[in-house]
Length: 453
Image 1 (tube, rainbow, N blue to C red):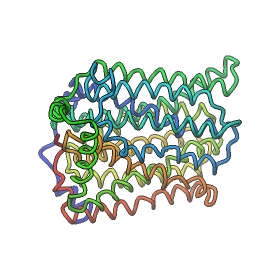
Image 2 (tube, rainbow, N blue to C red; image 1 turned 120 degrees about the vertical axis):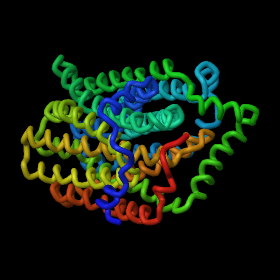
Image 3 (cartoon, rainbow, N blue to C red; image 1 turned 120 degrees about the horizontal axis):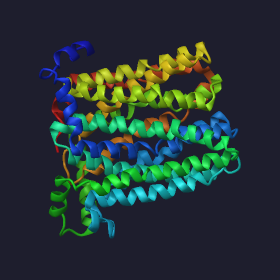
Image 4 (tube, helix red, strand yellow; image 1 turned 60 degrees about the vertical axis):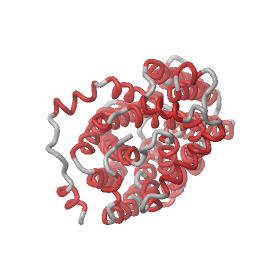
């Protein structure tokens, strides 16, 4: 069955009305997930694209900038300590706030400290310390992601999962925009007061550390998921080591026992690679074209933010309207072909409208693809005893593309030039679409079923 046939043959019940579609977004659980999504999205760019702009302005070469994708290693290895999050208690925090909320507050406070430490570094003089600071931010950020993902999957009933995923992804992308465009605006504003460039960047990062506290307040206001409470009661009498081993072994053995498990894991690794490969070099590309920091920030925060919001909710609508496999086809194709807009921008040059079109296309299609991908990952995690471990394993594998497979993007851009680079980033999507077709023909997505906890 071809992709278009799959879409037409896989339609679910009649599409919900817009009033019905919007009402679910106002549910308290969905609003909590939305705010936690912002908290999760905020730190990623601080050790990624925003840091790369800071480094580029400090004179760091493109090859080194590309290698800095490796500081995202914790996102690929977080499954290794996810069993600790599933099984262990954080002294004082767990007793005061509960199993999931205790870890949320604890990880967010550590994240604030890591961002403040990165703010004190200097890319021009000590790139090694910058790398260490970015590595700490990535580690604390990925730990927060482990808990937020488990909290989201466990707290939302099936009727609110699509809205929760759309809200989470939209807020996640907004958090990333705030830590990219928002930081760039702040740095420019600080510089306009006479502060030196490095000091301006430091205060920009300090402001981002303060915004992490939005997630902390949200965690304090939330209630512990019932699924987590029952899982905690079930394992309360077990020793700590036994709980960790059960969380780790149970999560891996249950998943690997499924049919086509290894192929599904390969698909998880490759689905977002096209986004990661091009996204790693988007900021340096825009700067090299001749746009100023403020040009880029204004467009990202303006039309880029609007495109992200629309794309996030459009992704939620698609996930609710079509089957999982049909939604994945839509998201996979859209996020791949959107990279061609940047190849076009490379020929157009320094044109504000062209940049706005390119950024809007990237954010819109990226948000759709991410919402649908999150729906798929959530559907694979159905046991509250090790939700955090399984979801962390899947998202860690997804980060392999962003961290390792895309780490050579800078060298490819230098060797081919920008137009051909973005064409290559489209071709990078082909292996994931081949795996998608293979899994579809073997009934993998029908076996996964809807998102249930």
